[in-house]
Image 1 (cartoon, helix red, strand yellow):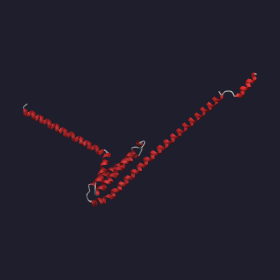
Image 2: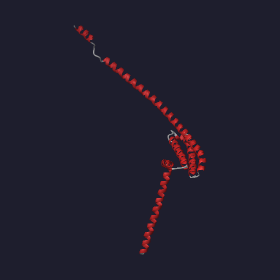
Image 3: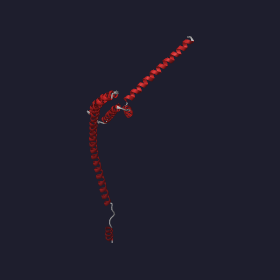
Image 4: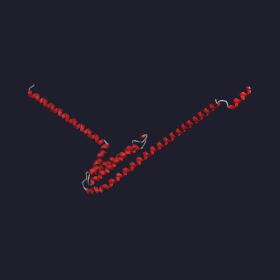
Length: 205
């Protein structure tokens, strides 16, 4: 192998290594971007930041997206607390609400790209009404979850109170019985009175 061939081989290896490095870097970046997009907390914070920094008609659209995101987030947090979620209809119903919210968010994103103020002015009332409806549905879901949790807590606390009352009554009965036994034992072992001692001495005389 001549010197030129060695140099070409080295250069080819360097180029191949560079290509592999770039490919790996691109794949890592894509993975991070997808993970960030899936992370609702990060996406919600980004959305709120954009709403604060935006100007013009788009700010109203972003404000609606923020409201929608917060409503769906609060509803999802409530549904996760449902006891016996596999037997409840709430998770399934909220899944339908979340799907409608996802479609509504796509519509709002489409409106966000509209730069004609007149068109946005016509579309905003209907979009605001849809967001209001989603918020009302989520409030109903949260109320149902809160009622279920309150009922479970009330029943559990009532049962616990009954058990505590029984244990306290049993403990008091045991203490009363122990005190009665102590009083009887005290009387049985009490020393004879002074009068009895005087009578006994008189009899001996």
